[in-house]
Amino acid sequence: MRSHLYKSVVLLYVAFLLSSCTGVGTTASTRYYLIDPIEYSNISAVRPMSIEIINLQIPQYLERFHIATRSSESQLEFSEGHQWGENLRKNLLRTMARNLSALLSTMDIGTPLNRSASSPDYRVQIHIEQFEQESNNKVKLVARWQLSSSEAQTKPSGVFSATLQGEETIKEENYEQIVSVMRQLYGKLSERIAETILAQEK
Image (cartoon, rainbow, N blue to C red; front, side, top):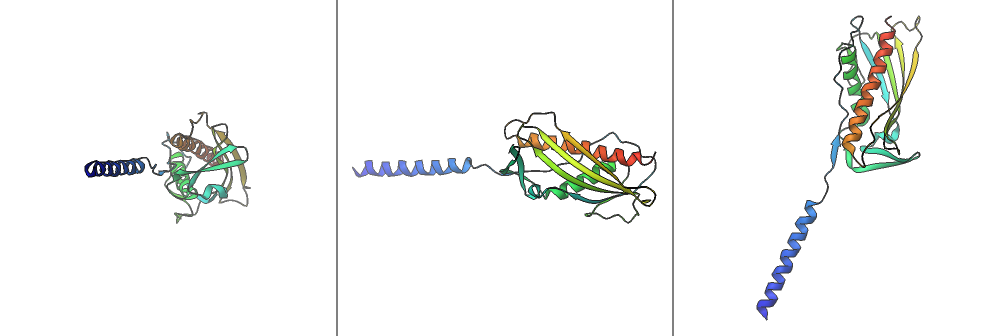
């Protein structure tokens, strides 16, 4: 009788240990993402130039580390298990600088994070108005930017805008795909900004 009771206790204990281990194994870990620069075929600038990105602003809801998506036109969802590896605004600012550096063939790109000692030929202010997956499972980027030259008295500032949407339909909760499309769209926005700068040189 005691032997049977002892075996039962041992079996219950082993079952408890196995269930505990299984519980630990199924706990999902948080994944972290960044929007990296694009590799371009260089666009040759007319002359060596210095660019200053004065500021880059994003909506307050994108300041969170949790990646945002839209479940409807006016409803946001934030992922606990998929987050940005750093402050998104700083990530976008640094990536824009590297993208413009490649597109304009210049290393002289100043930002609030990395000031340049040169007097800039052009200054850019960027406002990201929307940048996330929409309820139609496609990523959308809406932005505007203001460009001014060092000759602001003779050349008025130009204000430009772009609405870009990814062609890929995002698979359910595929955050790696979401970030990949965001990177592509942000690379296209960088091209648009570079084109407006080069247009001033003509």
